[in-house]
Image (cartoon, rainbow, N blue to C red; front, top):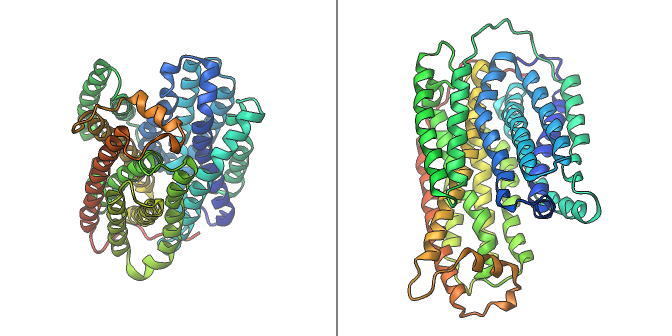
Length: 487
């Protein structure tokens, strides 16, 4: 457990620094990677620069959450920061796309240790009534990074060697490392338990293969089929191992608890819907509404306003109204915002698109904060790391599955057109690169895109509606195994 000597304010500053390191890295790399890939070559491997990070992070999140319950939070956090910083240094020296992919995978392992365990530290340090306010601060870090990251990426690519895309985070990481070493103190734990290495390995293989199947769904069918087979086999072996292990790496009983199952289900579905928003709303504004990329960016930025705003309000309101009511209200906001997107037409104002983005972001802010607090309140210290990691895992998997499912819906819509030629990916790419004036109001391509994106928004709305059902399944009273410790 965290020791009373821990300086809560400075530990939270270190948590925010570590979160900023991961968040800014993601947005900077997204902006700068086209120029980096042009220099390194092998553009056919481009998507794996992002997929390798994501699959490593998602596969290791639950493993490191469990390890933090055994060895304490501080050692796992320090390990995560060191791995992330070493990988960042190496990525700056990458000499080819395969080497870049390898170093990005190593970065993902570091992020998989940092993200769940730092959020668990917040749960250790603060009682439930205060925790939402701190989570609001952390949400604002991600929102600010989403705005600052692309700007920094552009500045670095045009004025500095591209290696600084990765090295810019080294000072931030070192400050976070020093903050945790100096200000986070934990009570000595005399806990001995066996490590379920086989379970951890099977889980990592299962999730990595699932992520490959989802992220490469548009690629060669043989690779996708092989990944699915590996997932099925390894996941079946994982379930067998966890039932027989003395100390399972992933407690199946934990995932079966009603508050955790409901909150993770809501988080999973909400992440799918938000991924649809961030992926396809800018495309709709640019191609169907015929607006500039700047206007599309402003419409999406409303998500980044609604999310931290709701997270901040949640900390003030859920002690009064309760976590369940706040989650139900947030779950209603997401389909309400999605409905505004379903009602978009070529004659609509981008203000309507921005309003839908704002409302969905507000709902996601409530869901993400309240579900995390509820899960942490449902367990004691010895399971809090695993429980927190389960929520972050659900969020990451939902984002990946959302991109795959809604991307497949868009592809179906583009290929199955009524009375018009199908739109190819090359046509869509060239269309997005053109100015708004280059697309006529009655262009066949524009009409096909309108229909395909409309279908995508309908599916996104249906997914969002399921969030309400998940939140209604949350029990009215949540009891945890140990009292929340104030430090």
